[in-house]
Length: 206
Image 1 (tube, rainbow, N blue to C red):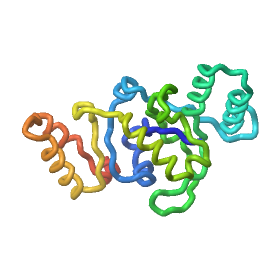
Image 2: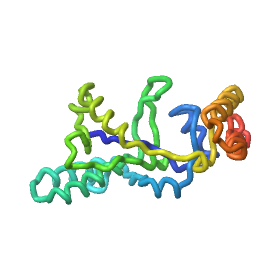
Image 3: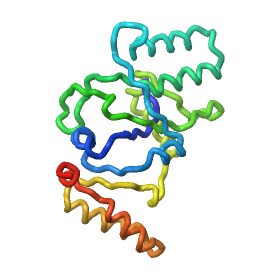
Image 4: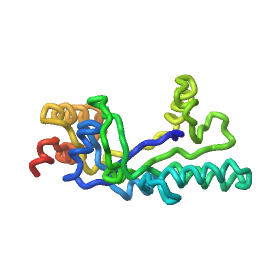
């Protein structure tokens, strides 16, 4: 089962290195207050143990209740929302870089998610995809196209930090900030953003 989402992590700067190694060497830091104001929610992590309180146990119990026919349409939405914000405490994940499976403690990521509102009156709105639908490229594209029309955005003054791999990319980002800011971009804001850029090495040695 998959849901449309944008993922964020709520971790301290000194803990971000392993996250960068797993997901990429670029990042933008935003405040937790910004996240709450824009509808983000933190996840509930559960161990994948063979008992009713485990991730898989709760997941299956909720699915069973939804399928039983006793839950109203409104209650089903609430139950699905619980599933959308559940995650295993740890597990195996394929690395984006090496392509190898790695043991990951997902709890360390302190994930928050932005999930677009589901509109049951809109036939294009997708609440979730089952495994078969997710693996169908045409269905997945249709769902993604709709999700792209429900973006989450931020302003330059929401940015609290910018992470890049090295000084080469620092210069590239500074250039892009100036170029995309245009003639109306305030010089003071340009300077503020430039000072917020940190390289991976700077974080390591801080």
